Length: 149
Ligand SMILES: [Mg+2]
Image 1 (cartoon, rainbow, N blue to C red):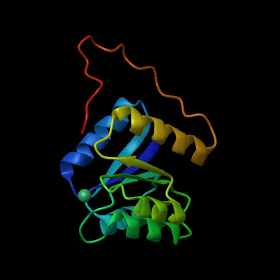
Image 2 (cartoon, protein in one colour):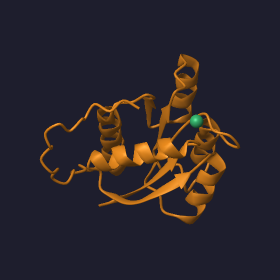
Image 3 (cartoon, rainbow, N blue to C red):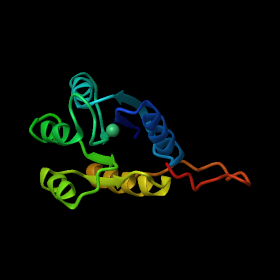
């Protein structure tokens, strides 16, 4: 099984970084979709099969909280787990996100390992089967796995 992943972030650079991180984590990806804000994300959801959403909170036009609210209020979308990847770290915000039904929460700057761990947990829970990472090529020496974005 390969997953279609929607990445919503107003920073194009951050979207690239997130996609690279997901690829490096060995998650079987069907297709990546990009959105610069919540409204774009909703348009993509209307027209494509998406398995998981990785979203920023602070974005213009429509932020992540509103996107989460819209997703959870939609019969067709509420099955889709949404993970926040955000600099927003106030307890109140996290609490609000939990109440709305967020599937996971990653703080920026993040370690690739954190994204990997949460993504696998969320996918396994959502799809109720073990997600197997393909065998990873042997790490090259000098490979820096400690990128800090
Ligand atoms: Mg942002």
